[in-house]
Amino acid sequence: MPAPLPESSARAPSSSRPDLRLVVGREPEIAPRKFGRLEGIDEARVLATWGVVWVHVVEMQGHSAGTAALGRFGTSFYVAALTVLAARGALSHPGRTPSGEFLRATKRLLRPLLLWSLIYGAYYGYYAYLQRNSFEELVRWWGPFAGTARHLWFLPFAAAMGPTVVGLVQHLRGWSERRLAWATAISGVGGYLLCYGVLFFVIPREFIVDSHLFRLDRWIEEIPLVLLVLGLTLWRAKKPPLRPSIARALALLGAFAVVEFGYLRGARWIVDTFHHVDSRYVSHAAGLALLGAFLVMPRSGLTRLLARLRKETYFVFLSHLLALECLAGWLWNQPGFGTVPFAIATTFGIFAVSAALGSVVRRVPGLRALAG
Figure 1 (cartoon, helix red, strand yellow):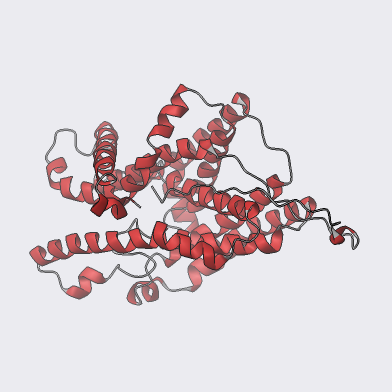
Figure 2: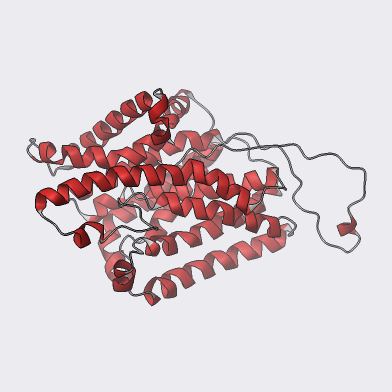
């Protein structure tokens, strides 16, 4: 899925000068320090990418909203992981600026957005030509918040949120642990109430589509998760690192399973009751549980096996929808189409094909940009 987000680290220069903030009673900032690589994110991103592929597979094969909901944790995981890594990077490098972060995101996120928008645009344009669709129909769902395919919205969102997180860290790193805890709770609850209760409905969907601002509604849905995870990350940075714990990992995986089961059984009721198409706050809970589980999970042969696939996840995310679109006609005519076992097999197949293609693309100099 979304771009590899390598975590930077640096050691703070030593200084013998006293911290004058102590004189005025302000708690010192979170000291710049070297953060270790979060291997759990590398491992869990494989499952998250599988979840993204699953959503598009089951939607194409006509499954229920509950079945599709089982994979929606994938995007939520990536939003949370993006926030954690951006915040930790800013803590490691006090001199990091939002503008500098945006320049880094240009190569890692916006260049692939442009290239793959051209690819998907050409594919859908050719299909529209065969179907004799008008140009207005072709570009109706295209725009700066969405690219030319429905899954590319994450790239401009990540490019915007990374610098935003860095800027917020600059202002919040000096806050006390207690103040951060209160701010996290208030911004978390307030963010969800504001974005899901007001902003999501205040902008007419017809205006969003007609103005080519499609997926702006998804940005609104994901911002509360960014605020919540940012607060939790800064709060945790003031505490000793968590040690690996199989008990905590299993508890969080259990919470993940409970949320997923509830999502499967209640997806339609949630949508009908709260009028949010994907009820993203439920997938946020699942994505956070998965992220937490892998962050505290002891490393094992299975986790190391997952980590080996991490390099392919970005290309899988970018290319899987094109592979699925190209194979849609063939899949439609296969025995078992529309069943859950067939959807599972299709998801693994699309993932494997995209990953294999990505491993080749990354070795060809002229094509490497397509892999991020």
